[in-house]
Amino acid sequence: MNAQAASRWFRFNLWLHRWASLAATLPFLVLCLTGTILIFHEEIDAALGVVPAAAVQQQAHRPLAESVANVLAAHPGERALSVGIDAEEHPGILLVVTAAKGARGFEDAKLRYAHLATGQPSESGGDADRTFTGFLLKLHAQWFLGPVGELVGSLIALLVLASLLSGLVVYAPHVKRVAFGVLRRGGDARLLQLDLHNLIGALVLGWALVVTVTGVLLGFGTIAQLVWQGTELAELRARYGGEAVDAERPPVDVDRAYAAALAAAPPGWHVISVIFPGTDFSTDRHYGVLVGGEGLDKRLFRVALVDAADGHVPGVAELPWYLKAILVAQPLHFGDYGGLPLKLLWTACTWLTLFITGNGAWLWWDRRRKRRRKARRAPEAAA
Amino acid sequence: MKGARALAAIAWLALAGIAGIVGMLLTEGAWNAAFFVLAALPLLAGLRWRLAAARARRAAAR
Image (tube, rainbow over all chains, first blue to last red; front, side, top):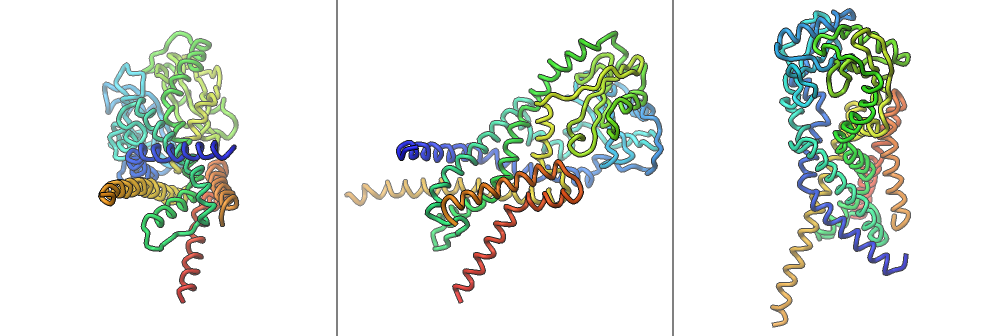
């Protein structure tokens, strides 16, 4: 690259760094604030009693179908969409996702809970986005705009990514003159802020790249899901479809579907969730049972189709690469997979990144203010 | 540290951080702790850098 092209490349990156960062500053502030709280969503939900604690801790439990029936009896007018068991985080508790009778989608779903030991419903539960963290997640992930908001979030992440990469290009000539890590405290606040901007930016670069790239991916979550429903799930429906069963009272109950899926899953895997027939994520005849293993296999679950008429498993489908990418992106974005130490690291990096976004905006504003003052003084001096 | 060396150090720190973050997702147990140290390495390096600089400044002032 000759000197002229290098200069043009530098100026383009300076322009990109400045305007991408400025455009993202305010939304990024909201994302950082909500994100910091969402990192601790498990602790907050536990403190607020969103998910009930098991009344009795015991291995044996009542049939899942009994819990589902009790929940539906307590909430007439609703149907079960899915059930979920999280033995690690919420032992002894069954999550029953319900919606109005006749509904197929999860958009207006309600979260109900039952105690596995007794089969009795809990008083906790309700709309997923009526909880404190559910509300914040809706703001963080969708800006209260639904799936369109997810794309807005993706665009913001893209702006931050552009800002990071262009910032690196802009920093390269700077570090030839000023040693990395030096903070010039000679009295000029601007130089100190610039050095802090560069130092902290370099330290959080890796983390910020992970969070922004995964943020871009997560913005396409709903689209990816729709693509899967329109292609691979539609293909499964066409291949295995048959006469529809009564989705509210399938002939094969949820316990038999659970056991059949577990038997068809790879050894050591467990059932994460059982989706009833007649939903957007199953066929009109089959349960869609999500089965997962340990580690990464827990996130990259497979879908076992269980015939709700006779209980046989016609197939266990792997998710396509684009859904796998989004599933892996989720923990990498929220940092909620490594316990408290990782959550604290995530919080520190979030606040440091927020700091450099703010001080970058200040550097721009301060430079602009000084230039304007200088421009005003020039004619006065000439007069 | 200036120029290409500084840029290389920044790139290595970023890569170490990314490797640590991804590694923690893929592993369990002791490996998890090792990858956490890698994930936190950029911040730890920054902290060590600043502490060393502060010590040097204090020594120069004396």
